[in-house]
Image (cartoon, rainbow, N blue to C red):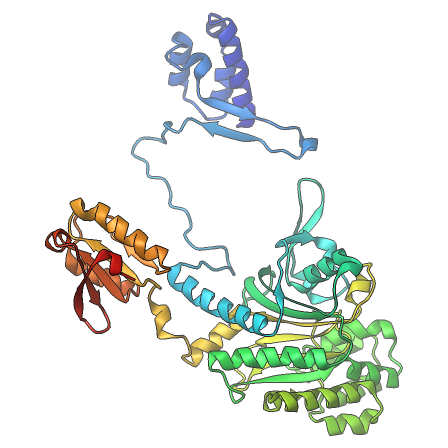
Amino acid sequence: ALGCFAAAHRGEMLAAKHPSAMMRTPTSLRALIRGGLITRRSAASSVANPAAAGGPHRRFAVVAAAKESGGRSTTTVSPDKQGDAGKRVKQIDLQPPKGTRDFPPEEMRVRDWLFGHFRDVARAFGFEEFDAPVLESEELYVRKAGEEITTQLYNFEDKGNRRVALRPELTPSLARLIMQQGKSLALPAKWFAVGQCWRYERMTRGRRREHYQWNMDIVGVEGVEAEAELLAAITDFFTRLGITSGDVGIKVSSRKVLQAVLRRFEVPDDSFAPVCVVVDKIEKLPREKVVEELAALGVKEAAIDGILDAMAMNSIEQLESLLGSDADAVADLKLLFSHAEAYGYRDWLVFDASVVRGLSYYTGVVFEGFDRAGELRAICGGGRYDKLLGALGGEDRPMVGFGFGDAVIMELVKDKGLLPESLKSGNVDDLVYPMNAALRPAAMGIAARLRATGRCVDLVIEDGKKPKWAFKHAERCGASRVVLIGEKEWEQGVVRVKDLATREETDVKPEDLC
């Protein structure tokens, strides 16, 4: 089609300089006929009467940019050009792309409520908010061969031949920003974010290809005091939503546990990351499948049995008897559980040696939120990742953080019936309703006065709305009052205010409204 329009454009230029040439040189019209863009009859009419056909002012435009400039070609057709008469245009698919969501107002209210709690908790713990582009360089995420996340990227080559990806998580973007700050960054840094993430993965309950994630991260603290603070934030968040330690637990372990077991069985260090990926699937796969995958990595039978026995431990006492009291993993976990006692959330924590988290950058304590009923996938997860900056070419710094998605927690909130009733309607304080069109200027002034005091005001701006409709609309938008502006009342210098909770009506002077 672009070729056809280009030919047409050349013909128009010729027509502008030599109108008679259109009769002798209908090359552009033949091109349009071949492209199916005009009929032979309209072509004949154009040749006979080029002025009627639009002549040099015909509203076709072609903009073609050279490939190397990174531009694009577009074609525009006159907006008054209609399709075939009598044919109805096929309706577009009204559903969002598979694995994504729309957020109409009723869903947006719920999202804002959840995100509000994310932000309130983070700020209560002294964290500062950051953000980064949802589109990042692909190399930011391709860290280790075989890591599952690298197969789930929405990645492509842009028009400048750069490999880019929609971010699947927020931590690498944080790492990039921390490296960007360099030595000017005051430590410890406590940052949080709420951002959209994308993963092309199999969808299940609580898992979508697009989701929002709340991250809290601490940079510059080497001890498990940082982990303890983050776990305090997570349990505080659950408590604010009405979720108890009887509903949710947090499994805690350390990557150092598996590291020590592998060394005991002389498994090479370069096998550690891929073994972690397999161990992370222990609860999802039958034992024989886990054994098969570990064997495929070259792990010997005795080492496989040792790994699986160690990962079945569920108390720190068992861990201490296996590794010894002087092992780093044992010391870290005992101190962390002691801090949890001091904070008052010890009853939320469960030691589970099989928790290693699937991402390769974790180096120490790891944790994972789960519903005790066992009906949902992991609610949240995180841990220490002291070596991530080095893997990205920077200078390592102690870092620890967590990611908390919006999808699973909302499944749990709905299951427990914890959504506030107030979210079922809007957040309007007042509905201002003029009884007729002549009173609308007065209503506009009243609405402006109320909005200036900080109230949320919906003004009825359509003609012909009856009082019955106005009161129903007020209920739909969650208004607590209706301010009625009637002709008689306005002449008396007052408006009528109806409290929708008490159903009481009072006449109030406009200047006394608040």
